[in-house]
Image (cartoon, rainbow, N blue to C red; front, side):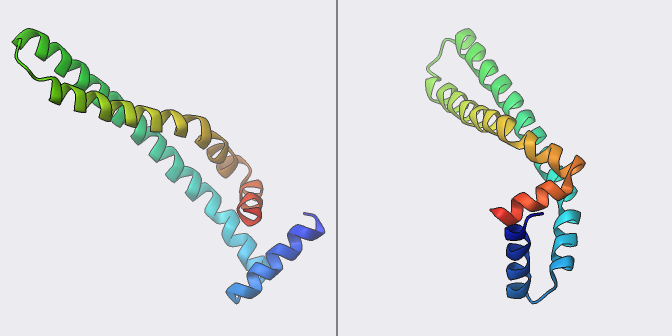
Length: 116
């Protein structure tokens, strides 16, 4: 670590009333936990997105078969699945870096947290 990062860690440790070594070890231990939570959230978003899209497609097909006016339900299912899908895509492009660094390079993850 460079001198500026070490200074940041020591200042943060003083504010929290602990030592820099303890703070650093806590952050390094937290990295795989945070990566696991990010991974579970990513999988959950993708699963929710998948099931909402299937539900919306089913509603579209049911409306075509029934021939009744059910545009409101279909539109709500489509909008909800679209919003969740966009959230899943954002998570898909932002979360992998944190997941990989949390599992395979926890020191880098901890350093990123301190710099934030």
